[in-house]
View 1 (cartoon, rainbow, N blue to C red):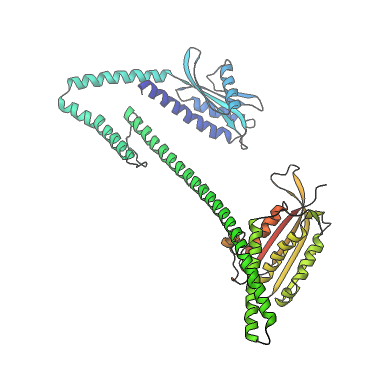
View 2 (cartoon, one colour; view 1 turned 90 degrees about the vertical axis):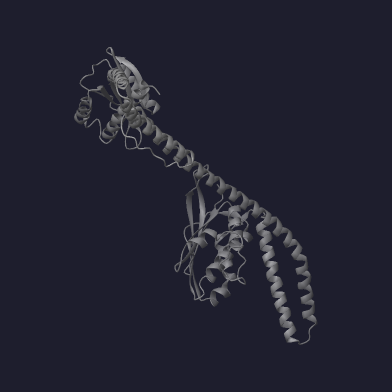
Length: 465
């Protein structure tokens, strides 16, 4: 990198730094109301001997502020400001202003909403850079003269102090970075080329560290996606296996159940044997029920499309559970608000859903409590709806039971996940229920807190008019 390139870089950094300071100051004020303040700011910044002038433009009020040294002939820079506002990015150009070679740095200003409201153009003379280049040339000539006329010891000292040691530090830093130590930083103070090279090296190390962290994050996301895909494949395999097992187990179970029934009919007062046969029949019925639920989960059938009376459906379902409700000393509070819109769907499948929800609520209150049922019509906006809003029936099933923790809520709809005893649940009820509601183009939400009960909210879409 040449001395000129380095000085140009340095000049650009200085101008950008001034620009950032101006950007912070001007974006915090209302330019149309603070005209005097804006003028004072740009006049104060112009006092820097390297700054030739500053332009500030406000787009909405069409206001243009000039520093004292600038005349009316600033239209090219006003066009640069407008271009920067339009493209929403800084503009940097080398130009000539009144026979002066200048570097212009133009950038947009944004209001508090992030909208470009105006822009700023800073003009800096490049003559100072040329002077620095000439000074650097004379310095090199003087240094050469001193080195030629000096002693070998002085040559060795200067070489070691100003060249060998920084280069050694750079070399050592490169070696450490090559071994993977991306936190490596080189401490070289000064404004010479080696110091700037050290600064560039430090910035490169920071950029490499950030790139490495980004790659690691992307790799982790990719691994997580692969794990999800493997889990999906595993569930599909389990579904196929479960379907085959269900068919294979179903036939022997039917034979066992039939033989047990036949033996029970032929018994004459043998109470112990009859009791054992009752146990066999009970367990085979339970296994058959699990298989039916498993088959229902693996091969979902599309719901029938019939008119559904929500009031009657919920009432009938509660009637089914009347004995359990009385036995558990549960008080049922049912509220249906407003005129419910018409629904279509499969009444049998929907009854299975609410049967599961009611039964779960009752079982969560072993010492009794309240089962609150609230049904309301609602207009809801959801992502993917072309018409914006759709009419839904919202059914809330709330209990005052034991409640659930966060981990349970996250897994409650997973297949075979259950918090009940093995004899009381299969872990498929809520999974099947959510699938049924999704087949009806609805969804289920759940809220719960340990010791305070749970609320399951079912949303079913109304028939489109």
